[in-house]
Image 1: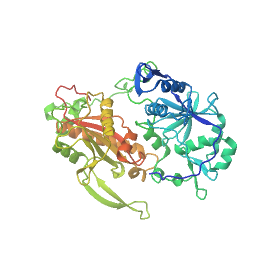
Image 2: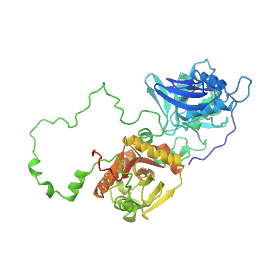
Image 3: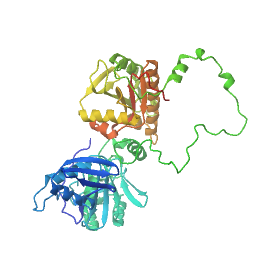
Image 4: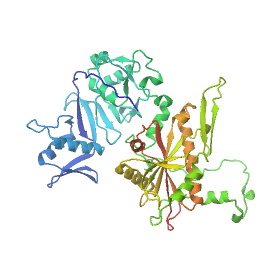
Length: 489
């Protein structure tokens, strides 16, 4: 976990932060006092408020200064702040940094997580700042955006001078000089709070991997952490999943690749055998399918769950070995399991969100593979419900799965050994474990379904472990399938 830092506050700069509604969102105040956020045909209820509050928050279409939620008499108005906070939780706000309400945007902050609220780290003129090695600038259409997989928001850069400042921060820069040159300490504090910038120790090499103060980040290559954060749910606001974004742009590829030219070697004559003569493994592979509807009158039992976990993920052997680097390197521990793993790392852990299981209470559990035991983890009921409902939505199922298995990775187990390929090796391990779960569920007469993504931010909240230390990399729905469900492969 990141260590908290305490700083003395800088003097106030000349730029201010304003909250405003994201494009295509409007507010509707009804006669009953109910305020609704409208986005196309969707209406999000925000609660009942006084007419004065409903009128005041209409200013959000242009911008409302943060921290100035006051009535016409100058007294604080907690209703306005409550309404603005609710809009923020629904991801309906962005924040603009400008010299005045009517002035040009210098930076626009786009939240990437639902609970983001702008905070300015307290800095003083003795600080030395440096751009995080995970931060990057890119073109998005005709905009320039500053992002980081560590940041809960992205920063849309509107003022070219700010791009110059960011370029300077490739090497350590003193706060005093930065403030004198750019006169925008609010932005610097916002970037530090979002882990886009960090306060470097002048006595140390600020460009080293350990400079950011988190030893777990040392293990991550830039592209791996970016891939993890952007290819899953929870830490970005981009469209995700089966949205068919290129319909009408590019024709879909055929299911089977067009054949290469040349004389073929026909293998069918070697494969002609009676289906009854097929081996049990062949039969199992052919019977494997995805199950999305589960029989809630006959949930999976604890005995069945125990057998499945024992057969797919239990530790089978332990040993130690010296690193083979020619110089008698450190001793590394290994613990083999039933599926293959890159470098015998076996970095994957199973966490179970239990909805229905005969003999086991509803809750969130970690599977202790060495002791073949389930260890309960205390979580907020709304978080457990959100995880189960998320799986239901991802599968397009009529109800949550009986048991949702989240496959998490202890990233350091793989990254400690491998460079540049660590994350893709982890995903390959997820693939073979998923197939192992499929085959065992099929063999036991149970149903299973792989889920394409997981909410890594929600998982981090439920476990209390930061997303880059041990994070969700896959999910698998499990239960007793309904007899009427149409099989899908």
